[in-house]
Length: 330
Image 1 (tube, rainbow, N blue to C red):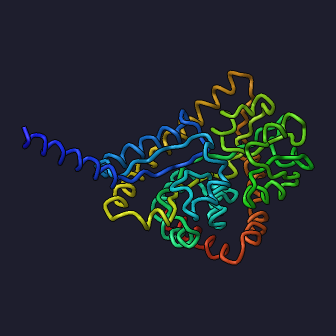
Image 2 (image 1 turned 90 degrees about the horizontal axis):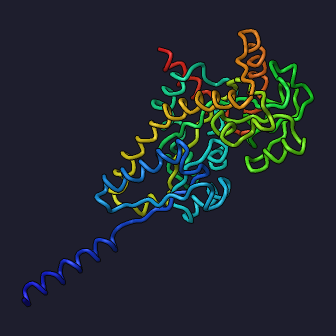
């Protein structure tokens, strides 16, 4: 009996020691749990737990539970938040040049987006994120940008002088300004109120976020400009990363590959939500070749201003991205 009691005590002590050694990381994100981002992040967390043998667990906080994206971006370098799934706009608060991925018509196809992301993103941005206090684990598919408006905007000429909500980043704002519209940079929280009060008559938005947020109720004209492709980032605080062991880092790094599943998930959701919006009365307009050329004609002018706004490192990073595109074309 004493031997059994001693064995039980040792087993209990071992379990306590293992529990004490386990690492729990907090991950914040803006998207709700039921979205593609929420579902894939849940799978990422489960994969981390499996690969680490339970030594690393990730607690996910959805829907801005830990603060908005700007707050999460500020907390990461300080180590007050372990991990975050951020949009391109928020990730660019840490590395402004990351915003260049959202440059107007930066990519010619989805295949090019995927190639540049897979083969060249790490070499282009890893060091910059680490200098900013974060580690880039993976890019995040956010999707195609469109314009949702209260009246038809088939070409930039239809938009001249109109107030258009843009993402609060030079890439989106400078492009809309270049078209002759009056860009009004606003966060997502302020976008719907601005539409309702008439402060703006249109919004630029990724398809999934815009339609899911209900913008079509106030801005039922959806023009598929595709003027940008938004890529966010899965980041971990460098302070957190440096405190982890090799096994823990390896588990997180391998699990981050699950983020690739966002590509088909988001792209399928885009089409499904556009169809849903049509059924609800929205008018979805795919530009003709001439109309698309008109939208693209302002990209070069906008890019000059974007590079100026993003600082001294931006031209070199932009050149690196253009080289990556050329490599992907071979």
